[in-house]
Image 1 (cartoon, rainbow, N blue to C red):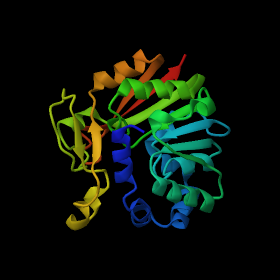
Image 2: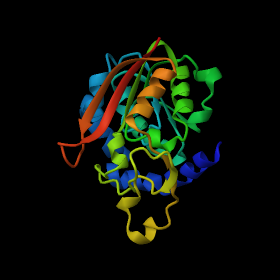
Image 3: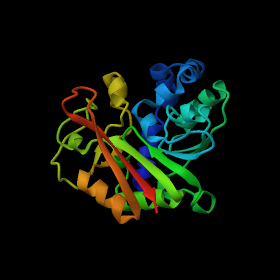
Amino acid sequence: MVNYSAQNKKAWEYNAYEFWVKQSGTPADRAKKNLEDPVGMLKIHADYFDTYSGIKVANICGSCGKKAVPLAILGAEVTVFDISEDNKRYALEVAAASNVDMHYEVCDILEIDMEKYGNYFDVVFMEGGVLHYFHDIDQFMSIMYSLLKSGGKMICSDFHPFNKISDLLNLEQQTMSYFSTDVFEGEMAHARFYDEAVRAQIPKCSYRKYTISEIINSVINNGFLFKRFDEHPAWTNEKLPGEFTIIATKQ
């Protein structure tokens, strides 16, 4: 495991299970919400799935299973890849309470077992801010391409690069030049929900934020057929871009 992945793992395993219970409810409570409206729990991402039943989905950095479990309820065969054991515990407890099966691999995304998972998935899906955890976006996109079957689809939904210059989503992370290529340390996404004494103890993550052109060119350069690029409003101000979604297929 590369050093920055080990660093990020420490941050994402700091009190994570307890955080999810506090933030999203007990596994039983979360399961009830998922079962009541699994498509609604997918939010805007539901628009990008052609079907659910029987498809094999790789949920990259799938965290607490907030999208993976609804997908499983809808009939998908879901494998979550994530770096946190605590995230796995919560996600699998929610899946069990939802009476669905779900695979969960705790690993460095850059070291996924390609003998097992290469050319395996119909869909590779990520959302909620993933790309900035990886310092080499070409390496990351190459792995996404390798996971897909021929004709498979990548759904890459992430924070809009404009967040580099303005904290549009109120994540309380530092801003910088839009064209900065610096790797920097910053708080993990949930740190802002803790009081200052606990917040100061949470390990930092190592980030590299990208421009729109870096992201798009990496998708194209790694062999994907670029199909669609959508921009979505910020949670805090619908007049400003907060997120984006890329749809691309393996040729």
